[in-house]
Length: 273
Ligand SMILES: C[S@@+](CC[C@H](N)C(=O)[O-])C[C@H]1O[C@@H](n2cnc3c(N)ncnc32)[C@H](O)[C@@H]1O
Image (cartoon, rainbow, N blue to C red; front, side, top):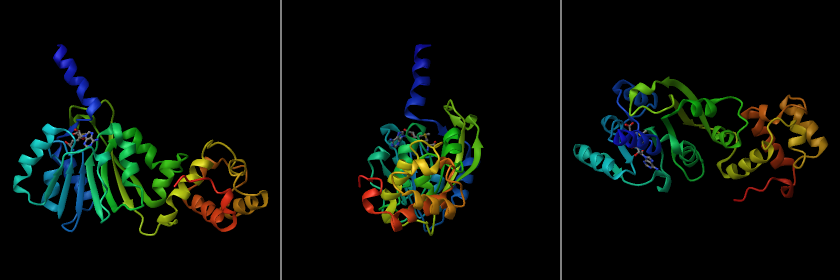
């Protein structure tokens, strides 16, 4: 009884919810549009449920798994797949490839946000597209429009995030406590803001969205002068009293470009980078 309890407790902590539905795995690879030219990362590869089907299609698969026993299983299974590389390491400690790469993964949910932070930083990072299995609540939050979360807003300025479908917990062993969902991510070919301005944009978004219900005129008062705010609101097609948390991505791009063009740099929110 006590041993069973210990086993049940291990899974939620380590995120070891292995996907056993082959159709869902095939769908994930198809939705990610993986081709023989792609290098694909499987983050939290487990025993290779996604790694090996990926290896049949992709040019190269990099399976990252920090559990030693799972990494041993992966090494044994990948013997007949010369295009699979196993990295036994914490994903958060691994260096992101600069060359283009994709991700197809059922990730450890406990570190979903740090994983996305690492993948979706457009600076010195070759991530292009992917499909991730994540917790359903997080999938809804990440794909909601508009977003009042500055971190998610920054991800979306450079990437399309799309909710694909919910996935029942019955497709996993051990089933997670929460429902899951697939999210498709694609890097934008022509983002409205240059990669070099990523940290500057984040600083503006974090500053402006400290209190998302604040009227935009008030939230941005320390950055823009009152006449600038008046022009900005007119250009965005919103009232000055519009809550800042309701601005859409394209409006945030306009706010940013207006700041860069018309506001003296000493008034820009500090980026720390
Ligand atoms: C949800 S399971 C998915 C396993 C496998 N991809 C599957 O679908 O069957 C997540 C996996 O991530 C691994 N993991 C947890 N934290 C990790 C980390 N920081 N870096 C790399 N792998 C991690 C766990 O050991 C587990 O195998």
